[in-house]
Length: 287
Image (cartoon, rainbow, N blue to C red):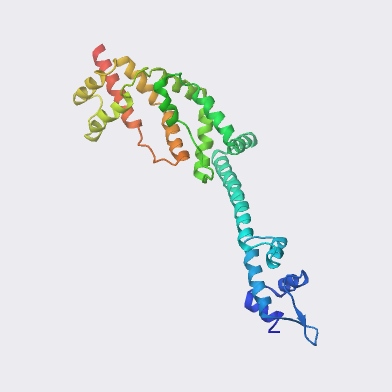
């Protein structure tokens, strides 16, 4: 025999108590010298080094015993343990997100429970919640693509930021005011393909913003006239006002986080400029 229990402890970094325990459990064979002290061979050293690694990976003793006894291969145990850890990580990530949101909001017990329930919805339950929200949109073929772009799809293994975004987004879908805004925007969609006025506003207003033109300046008038060439002023103003609802932009930003998309460009400055310019034109016409 090559090692005393103290020498084995120094080589493995394990305590004498731990080695004695593993020996008593039959995981590390030992023999006794004439003085009654335990002695270990190099095979025992190798077994202890493997036990140390497996314990560091949180495998339990029954699983370790089956590996040492060759009842299970190490890859088989590793695969099973990895799957279990993945489940634990998903659960911990959900809890982390819920607790972060609850702490930031100063949530009470009722809100904490609601956040937890939203975080732990099954995929089918999330799909039902989203479908109920999107049912607010009219049954219009033109809106089919819009519905797809508004659909959150939480990945199988979301990170904390995605779960936090999902929690806020799910709450927005239940907001009656936001639902009314969505209906207003969707209800103004023509039943045939036509350029989105918001996209047109972004295209026309961006240069004016970059040039530092104020919406009530005379230099803004050509932009306003071009905007009004596509839509009646009142209709355009109503649509842009609805689109400027901060909840709409917040939903789009949260949606990008949940789906792993690139963050969208903020529309608020562009919409605000266009709305002010249109109203300024109306005010001047009334004078």
